[in-house]
Image (tube, rainbow, N blue to C red):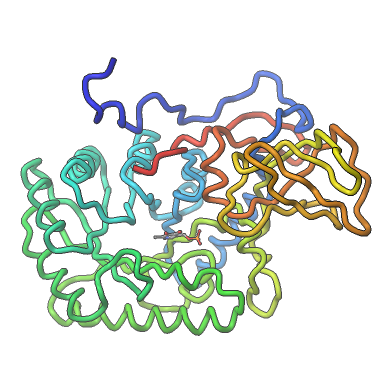
Length: 391
Ligand SMILES: Cc1ncc(COP(=O)(O)O)c(C=O)c1O
């Protein structure tokens, strides 16, 4: 029995937040499948590569934790110099805060009083919790909630780079919203967010660069309008893995919100990058390990991972170490590998590493990440603590 639905939806309680250390390390071959496997050395290489790439320009990194939902990974990003993390939802932020993370930007606006109250409580017990706003009435309500709680809540105005998801229109509408925020006692205007998700996966790298430059220029023009009106704009945050190498060259962008670069996925690997046909600057560090369990007909083999193990919103999972093999979803719990010309023999019981199609929603299907060390051993498990936290 619980006293209220709010306490039941208290995301931070009842969730493991720290790694579980195994008394006896086990070989990856002994981990039950389907398993969400992280190749630790590759993850570390991706983390370091992003830090090195951003260093010359001085652009900050505020990685998006919606991708991994895992405090262990977030803490590692902060250790390596991230200025804070992003969370997509209030509940995700509550979990990260419970795990000891202080600098959090919630990148989606809220529009109901219950969520506003939660944001305010979170900010009241944290050094630096911020949220975006994109509507004047919601901003005023949030300001009232913060004022009643005796705090000044830091907010960013979310700009819509013509993506049509969240954000206020560029130019005058954005300026008017900034004026509303500046006029609310309970709010402190600290900057702007602009995320152009519609261009992140454009296949043609040159076209992606051109569009990202256009988006940045339009957003920074709005920033200039706001500066000219007498407001400080300390933060201009946005961008993702698909445009990381463009955004860091834009002097006005203070930090980028890349998420997927840590693990990568097939959706990203399949687009061009620089002058390469595939995006391999960051390497796949995340796999779903599956086992071959049946061979109902020749030329195919059935594995134990389907819709409940892989996101199915984009491309299909890809076998990392085998050529001539094509994965097809075959239901909730199963996938069928079609064995094409040149495919190797696969015996029942064999384990196959599949590159995830889209990392964010794939991770959200699993309770644990299984980090494997260079020697093939698993020493600990990482809880996907904010799994399912989409409220
Ligand atoms: C607001 C926002 N910022 C940053 C990101 C990170 O994008 P990516 O995983 O492509 O790096 C996302 C992803 O959807 C997002 O919604």
